[in-house]
Length: 320
Image (cartoon, rainbow, N blue to C red; front, side, top):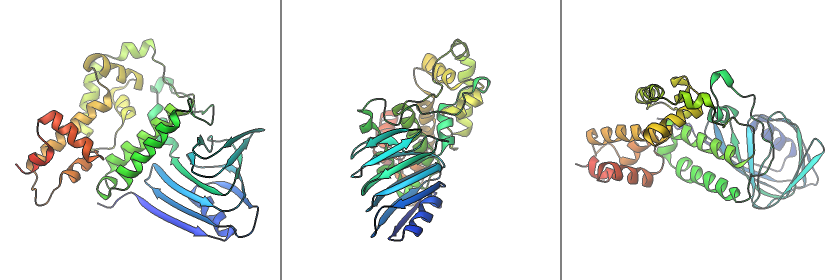
């Protein structure tokens, strides 16, 4: 299977080439003004469809005017000082800070001092999927009400999340080739962004949600999971299939099974992986390949879950 993940590298001293590269890479309406000669930019980016992770550094005092940009971009500074101005308000960020580079639909200016930053680019559709409500009361576009985290300690949470996605998912040829793994990683990043940065996403539980959290909802949700476990589905897809809100389906699983929809889906996929391990030829298959096929990016986590469920490590099942 061809991996949906593509790594790209770019390096240049030519301001015009750098402008074209950044504008095309980030599908952005932007203007760049380098404040000195001898400008140099190095950019490393891994694209995974619904998200991308990048590291970029540059050597000039750079002013960037952004009219619009495709997706949500979350920045962590490694060594650069960055000032962001929009609607007359300026925010300043230094090494170690995590912040939203853009708010969708809002033009802004950046002053980027020499140094390096890490970027995460998220498709807005993934954010909407993670935060979606019932069709009858869908919220408007998600708005982020501040650029910085709700709490400074959440900066570490974002760093841990991106490190996991980079190290366990993107750096594994086996895991990164699987759509279930990439979809899960995208939703993990979107959920972290919605938890870390203050926003207007619909999350409140309503009386209708409590009414809809019935055994009938549970049955519809479980049937959908059983039929579609091999597809890149998330909690929002499960809620839509059950014809209730995301909050209602979460409440139904908590109320009747003491778990979450995604934890239950993980159990279904674990059973499918067990089925494949029992029937696989160990000369042609590996535990990692089977685990990744069913959306498990981390070999150690899969082994721990499998051992807890079946009493033996997955390797023993494969070679039995």
